[in-house]
Image (tube, rainbow, N blue to C red; front, side, top):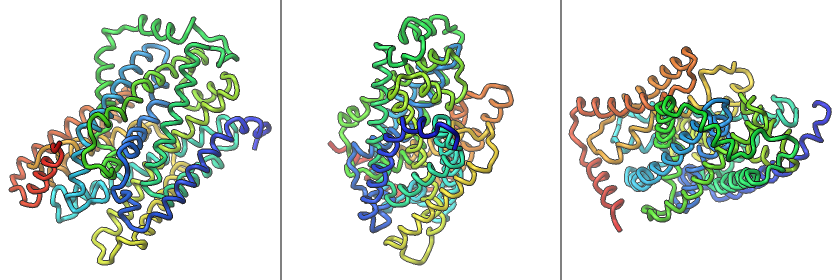
Length: 503
């Protein structure tokens, strides 16, 4: 450890330790209550809608609002306008996902064999007896889940090291252990319960930002460039070539709006709710926090850009700017909150990866009864194995621009988005159509990501062509397949539609 470690670490230690203790306590409490596969993987469908809904919302929005949007707003030219469009797309995306998917997915997943995982739901929904759809889905979630967990582990460790200089290897091991122990013990119920912790962290973070908008003395170590953050934002938008950037900003808006339909953990959260039909007014009240949070995310980027005088290119620089320029303990608290949100995003990726390997690939088709405690332990060790691979990847694999956090999220969303959305509204889709859609979406996202990097345009909205291609393949291949709808599928689809529309 370098000199001055304890002095730098003390400022953010207490809040980080508070989170760690709370997470472990929740994990141990859920561990005592997890006696079956259903309880560990899906909470036995007893999660209150507000808990499951908050967990689904913060699964991506937490990371987007504290990292992605501020980084866009901190860009020197036109960043504020792009950040506004991106934040608006995120708000719309989670609204549409909650309204269009959550109710029908909750009902259908129970009617179709009481599916406990997302790949299992797809297999049961399409009545696929070959196991191909489940294997393809689980394999994609496993690979991309491990990679995403590795990237988030690495980012969280870098945030700690940028402030404390503890060393990236030590920080990475601490982050990995913190997440794997918590997920190993409590499974999805524990992750869902920490959704409120993440929501509170976001709320506190943006309270500090809003206070600064009216009282810049909270960043008293610097002379903020501009008369005030709000006027700085207005000036940045005024000097931006709005007509020239309108098309690209609309693409940015649509890209983020489409990212919430196919994320496996968000869908698992919807499947775990106790209520089959959550009233729309309750859903609307759950989502009210997203609008002021989006505003706070944009203002965060403006403030940080002003503090660093526009020299922000990495997340580590952003965090270091906050810690070095904000009045203490404000800076330490804000850095701790960013770290908590990043590390809690990695637990969702790790859980879905471990579940896909151990439940959907390893135990699927086993002649042994895996529904009890032994089956739960198999899944737990699957999570542990996924965590070890993710940590090793973060430690030894070269860091390439191609495998970025945004690409991993885009690829998974593009792969599963069309199938998830349309299989709940059309009963004429087939297994071959779903497999073609998932595979085509992944390949298309990878191709457009490569094109974006090779042409020097890293923000090519790959999810739009990938989502469109996946939709076309889903319907075209299903039409060419020309299979009769099985009576089981027709009955489940009809019952889902009937229950979803009951008053």
